[in-house]
Image (cartoon, rainbow, N blue to C red):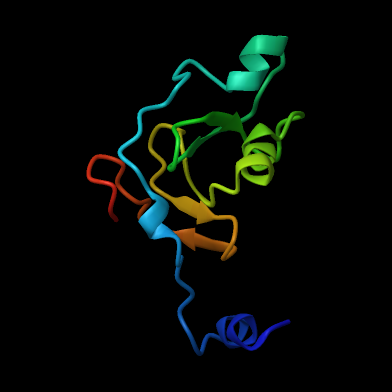
Length: 109
């Protein structure tokens, strides 16, 4: 474990996403569901929105885990929950929750 994560673990340092500059004013490309699951007839549990390009993917509890696969193929780190009533995000690279989720209307949190 590196020193910043160790400090975060101990509660000595608040973890922050250092990739908020990659948040764009995006709209969900497939607001009706996970882009890949819609193409293949798959199913999803929860949806995640890529805050860099608007890709909609399913969460890691879904069989396809398409949001994480999208990150691995594109390296777009910030996402947010696309579930109604949820206001949080996640940065794949910094491995931190972002609360509240970054706004996609202005491209800034």
